[in-house]
Amino acid sequence: MKPPECTICDKRFLAGGGLVYFSETPEDKKQNEKLKQKGMVGHPPNAFWFCDEHIASAQKLAELTKIEALELLKKKYNT
Ligand SMILES: [Zn+2]
Image (spheres, rainbow, N blue to C red):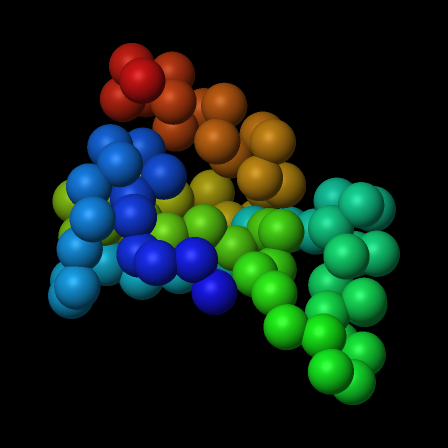
């Protein structure tokens, strides 16, 4: 797993934020299937960290893929 660092503001945090799992794209699905195999360790490609300030907005978009959701979030927060 990557260290917690907000996908929107790059803030590193130890508490308050969390991981948001977006809908899998076909590529994410392949990657996650690989990760599920024995002995594979890695960060799910559709999971992103958000700080306490941004996690609520991110969770609202969790039914979208990361591509759609991150585009909307970046527009919203002008990053
Ligand atoms: Zn943030």
